[in-house]
Each structure stands twice: as structure tokens, then as C-alpha cells.
Image 1 (cartoon, one colour):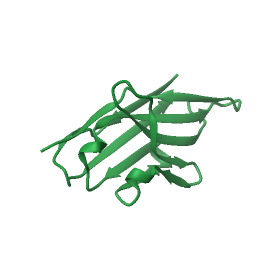
Image 2 (cartoon, one colour):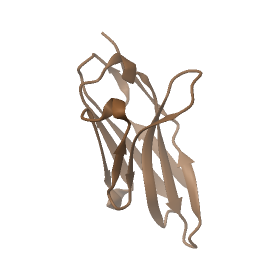
Image 3 (cartoon, rainbow, N blue to C red):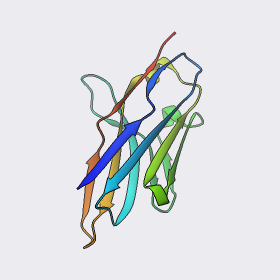
Image 4 (cartoon, rainbow, N blue to C red):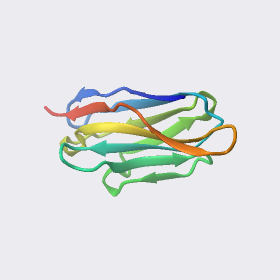
Length: 120
């Protein structure tokens, strides 16, 4: 089995910073994709930032220039550095991992989510 655990959320004032972490563990042969998604109540999850195993990154327009995604392949861990936070960034942030097992089948896994609240 694979476990995905997020951490680092919290309450921050506008203009502040947070760093989210996502750690994947368990029966993982390789990780092809890791991404952060945000979800507001009553809405679907939307991609915030993603990174492939080759290091290619993709960002939502709303966070370009403010958020930076990175990963440590040796630790199967992904990070999201969030700077200059705005009230609109308030949401539950979920980590998604697409991983292969030893026989080449891919599966996607979600973490439990971490709340980010930007408010004065």
C-alpha cells in the first residue's frame, strides 16, 4: 500500500509565506507525477502546481511568480513554497501522487488535505 501525508498548512496573514510538504511512502517503484490541488467548499479540486519525475513544472496562472514546487526524489517528497499569500489562496490543499508499482502499473493516490487560511 501507499500512504500520502501532507503537512505545513496553517493560518497566515496576507503577504506571508507557508511551505507545504507531501511525503509518499510504501510500495512505490517509481513516482511519475506529484501535484498540489486546492479545493474550496462546493467546488472541484483545481491544479495549483505539478512536477514530473523529470523535473518539469506546471503552475496555475493565479500562483505563477508566487509559488514554487520542488521535489526530493530520494525521499519521495514534494514541497510547495507559497510566498506573498493572498486571501484567495485560502483552501484545503491536497497532494496527488501518481506512482508505478514493481510490475509497471500506475495508480494515483491522494493525501488527506491540509488547510491553508490567509487572513488578517
